[in-house]
Image (cartoon, rainbow, N blue to C red; front, top):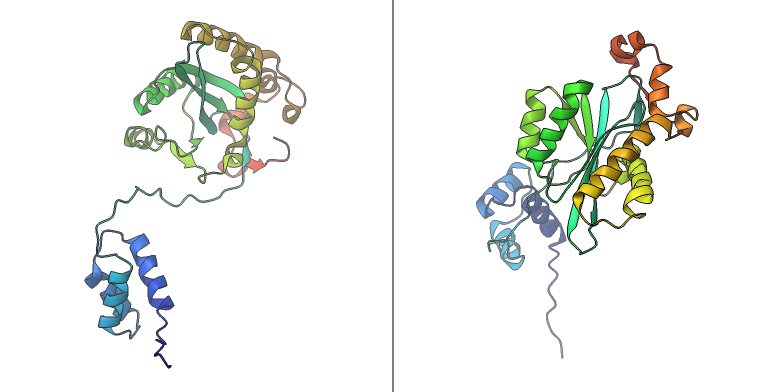
Length: 257
């Protein structure tokens, strides 16, 4: 017996509708078909509508908020203090199981630890408070490199950074190597503190973190700094060159993190 086999090939229509549904998820069929015709595609309206319904694009779907496209940039080492800072979170737990988080902030120029802030909750407003405290004694950075965590993409932090003329440099999702300075710092902190001690309360974490940060800044030898500590490295740099260097010479490619 012979049966009719359809020769329809709707792959192009499916790919086109998928692309538009991804880019404009809240638009309807009329919008999509209008764009298709404006692009010069002569697909029949009934055909496109049939595929549209088969793909169930006519049904309301829950969609997650999308991150803006992040541009991949080479990791650079600034040639002056307060040009680029890096921020990141870590997490651990007390001995009875309650989780806490740690906000770390460093200056990429000399890898100096500017703040280590442990707490049970560190929302965007708390991040701003810590930044204000550091800026009060350190000065304002030109840019801060962060990942795409909810605290860093919060509207509160973005508005605060915009008002203070500070650029937030977001790394690409799932690419921690683009924030390698702070990741390396986190590794040291976890090995020396978080994995080395059992904590009864946050006061113990804060005390140990402060002692560790002081020692790290004053005596920790960095290979990329010639084997000296962050504070010793600053003393070797001419302050006039650091604070008043030309914009065009502020960054150079990183050779050794």
